[in-house]
Length: 392
Ligand SMILES: [Zn+2]
Image (cartoon, rainbow, N blue to C red; front, side, top):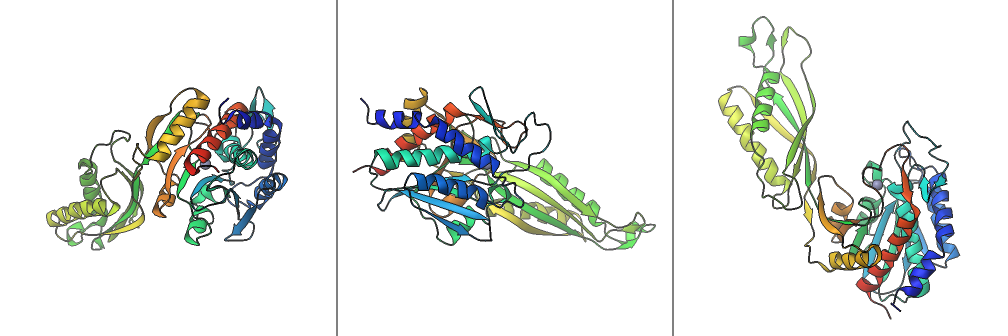
């Protein structure tokens, strides 16, 4: 009999309880904006109360509730941050998005997969760990606010205000049916490029300096140049997107100002500052070639790329646990997007993404999640906690 036979049975017996909790969470609408995560946090609190697990709540603004439950005691801590806010329902639903439905073993409703199903599974895992083991460290299950809008009132707030401290985190907000571990993320640089010229009458363009043409020239240079990078085995090459452009006020006026905003995604080995240096070089070359042209760069968002070594304990422990439960060792992946793993790592918490749920399900109509997958996810989380933190 494995160490986890009793725990697995305990979880399997609570399929109904997991379903009830997920139904309650979906039926507590937490569309962000306005969020109002308190309604979902109350349901989670009720669950933890029934299992005798202590919890605390923190709010940066009224009703934007973050709940943190804690199982075990000790210095080391493993964090599972699931978010309680959801995106708007949108169109095209076959069932009412805020009234959960169970059909063929799947729960349908907004947030079923992103992220209330995993939140419920993490809560069940914590209850199981509380009941079946004495952890030598702390397992923290957090239901956080505001993830869909950048986490300023959620995880970012908890970390900045030191409401939450941990050594490791498994972010249950990716996809891949527990067959993928996300250990790398591209970095992100949003930068506004402002072009300054000289105004003149449209009939005498030679008297002015056209800020829009200058900007077009610079953007063409950026488009033609290769972003410096070291190829990464898990990530596609760096990319850029020209997302916004503005300038000018009339056809018969030589514009004195134009601006564009670009989104660059960069790979480990380069920092956002490296990218800005590279852009500055292109700006200087464009200014040399077009006397009178002048550009400014205004960074709007800077996030460094992240990467956890694949031989890290956390990655190995997740891989072992998933292989036992799902029967297949997860493969390692990188992501072009961003999760809260970046914010966690910036606060010294080693974080990777690992989750139940199908790819392409987030933010779609008819969002759903497989209940058996959630139960298996809970079994995996218990194993990760016990092996990473140890037991008495
Ligand atoms: Zn999510």
